Image (cartoon, rainbow, N blue to C red):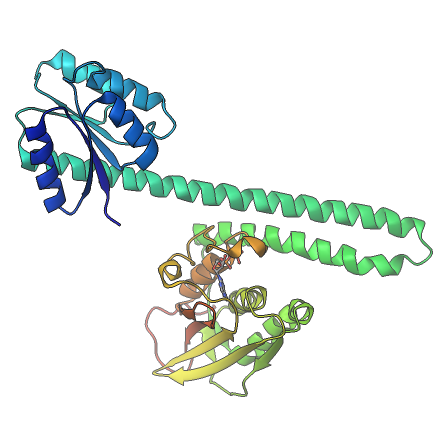
Length: 363
Ligand code: ADP
């Protein structure tokens, strides 16, 4: 979508000159002829940047800038002041009132366009950081809520068990809550180690990936049963691959957990192996909701959750861990997905009987 620039000026010629040059650069434009119109336009259309003339009758540019900065939608919008006055006082006044930059009239179109681009680039980076901050906050809030909830389940059912004749019937609930809390905390501590790239934590050795996969399947069976999902492991005997045993198991557990979480109730999950050019692919395919093409490039980002995932429990860390682990072992991770049809995640690992560069072998 085009970025929208609001031009605020009462001079017809300047408006047309700005509009022509901005649209030539593929920006969308909106026009306000005075300060009041500008304030309304920012509230209604939330433009990406405002070019604000200082010398306007009634509400001048400085006053407009001050009011915009105090408003909900104008607080963060980049503002470039346009002024015929080139004296220092006027420029400083605009900047002090919260303008991001200024251009003095008559202006060079090239200089103005450069300033517009720089302001928009900066704003885009700020918006990205803000979104990431919000994603992190949502994720941390989720984890705190889940751990607290698990502890209260453990506490509540334990005291119930102490009062009952047969305490064993509560042990299943207590264990499930403890496992859930532990797995959240494990994710956080594993992440900390992976991000610090602790030496030796991902040393690889030749491993039978089918055996590791079967261990991971065992861990996903309970959740699969609850959704009546069958997990089918295709028969195959690939040669050993260079992986870190626990790391590879965690990769497959995370992929399988997602295939079940986002998979179709009563459906199937397939795991199959392919050998090609010295690599072994382990693919986990589900029949779930799939992922939209414009979200695929973000699903491995830390804390990212695709739209519509709110109904499913998650902190947005599983695939980020998968990526760090797979790449940390010298492997690759890939996904093919279609909305409404399902997803296939493929982890590729180097075969152990083929010579690969940069493989760090266990001592
Ligand atoms: P979480 O599952 O905790 O949200 P992940 O990092 O494991 O976090 O996944 C990130 C996002 O990718 C999920 O929120 C979901 O939107 C999407 N996703 C992951 N795996 C699948 C899958 N098999 N099918 C559909 N969407 C998926």
